[in-house]
Image: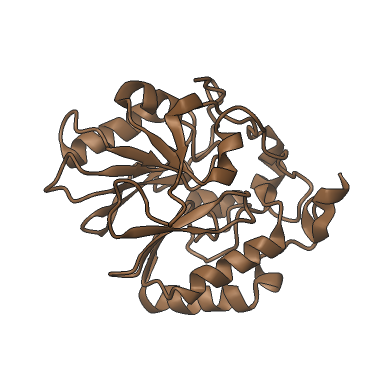
Length: 284
């Protein structure tokens, strides 16, 4: 394995960092700096949980500490499941795999970015947006290399070690981005297909003002696919959603705001200008 996230700590945080929230009995959302990770598993079954995403670079100890608090000392997950491979979702993945010796799963289209074969397109500091968008060129776009520790999610839509859940391909933010849905209670783990904070605005990231938005602008390279993915998730009619950035959203507020985002994505989410707007990626 090769950990390109080592020494890539980003000096940015929010007021909710470290303050976990139980969304369901078996869904625990933990904000770390400006991104969320999820513990999926019942506390009464401490050896049967999984970790969804691995947060910012340098946060492995915080994840392990929170896991120990929730499930007991040395109760490691059965697997790590990734929504995608951007730096703020795989920041601690190599450290955690080295410590826990557990498998990692991601969509097959994301594997080149998780095995050192491809780097992501550079973040777009020219995109319409706030200060975080302007700062984004400092964010890492390098792939990590998990070698044979990462495997593709099963093609039939199931998720290893997450019975009752299925993965939904939600590209646009990245080619192999996935979200996770449980039909039984219509719970949704979104990743960055949409978020509940305006992620390009430094003030709103710091304060975590809740507001449904499209995927982070500075890293999204295919806006039509991103819109199609939001439509796909809205059609599931989730009643609880944990996003990669921002506070969990539930109930009628989620239904209303997601419906509006799906219908008016071109106005609410797609930037007026930027390197990857209007198919400009193909022209680079």
